[in-house]
Image 1 (cartoon, rainbow, N blue to C red):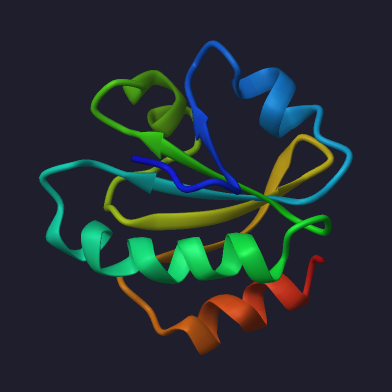
Image 2 (cartoon, rainbow, N blue to C red):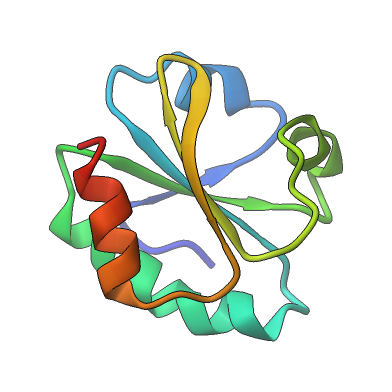
Length: 109
């Protein structure tokens, strides 16, 4: 499901690919049944290409990895969070425009 520049995140690779990442990580907390998640997916794909080399972009299926989602208080999806230095430093909940996501990323990239 993930595009070329998008990592598929799981509880198994979370520490390595998100918490220990040298670069900021944009995490899309999503589920297959979530219509707003499907609406934001093409925007996340565009951002993964536009920020390639500066920001790691990944998707975490909350149904398959509920423990990770609950650890960060993700109650509604889509939730898009930016992680730096092992911590969530910013997040947007719900479908938002590409412009809103760019503003959030530019604060951390």
